[in-house]
Image 1 (tube, helix red, strand yellow):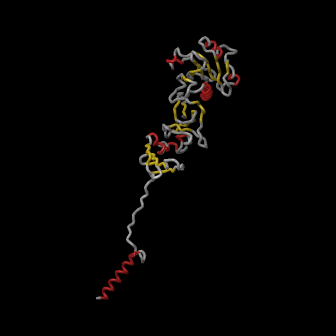
Image 2 (cartoon, helix red, strand yellow):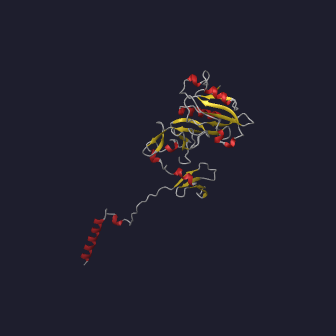
Image 3 (cartoon, helix red, strand yellow):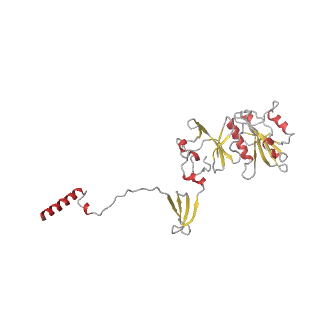
Length: 324
């Protein structure tokens, strides 16, 4: 009997050893293997280096899209929930795939530090056929731009052109704020600007734009300045439509009241202006037409002096305003 018990014990011992991965596995404590689950990081913390501040760190909670101001013991001093409009700054640009061949930062002209994108889309696209301005990108810069675009047939969109350094290619740069607006049309409509006030363009800024715009379309553009009846300072600038203009001739009447009827009786005539684009010979650009033949700029002056206009200027690229 003792031999049978000994035999069974030894048989069991060797059988268990055979099933073990090592001779010592049988003597190891029982363990259960659990899979490791990696959770995405949802909290991001930045420590304040100013030890005198009550706020020792700022934590961003991606779940709730809130900013938590924490004290030394990580207790929440204040929780700030982000405005829904701010959430786009923690999200991927939804139009990235349309511009992958340019840059994932095409929405901000390849410069996300300088340019912000509050509306998801101040760079303008000018439609040469219709004469209309389209706002493409809103920025916090001090100036506006008219960019260069190419039409993408696949996506049916206009893509802003950039150079090899990712910088925006422009048709007109450094346009003072307040001159351009989305949807305005220069070809078929006259336009009026209030100038010289707070957050308004200056007379010089408008003149620079008028010269560059005339160069861009290759035609003359023309209009009038108006002032307060009590003062001589220019307060409004009118620019007529360019639809029937040529490189050496413009058609413009002081139709400011058709655009701003509220100004009737509240403004006085001041200056008549027009551009001479560089498509004309230099000698013709620097002098008024009609000096040797009837018509032209000199006839225009004779017709408008009786209307109260006392100053007449030519605007041309590379030169100060030319009085005539």
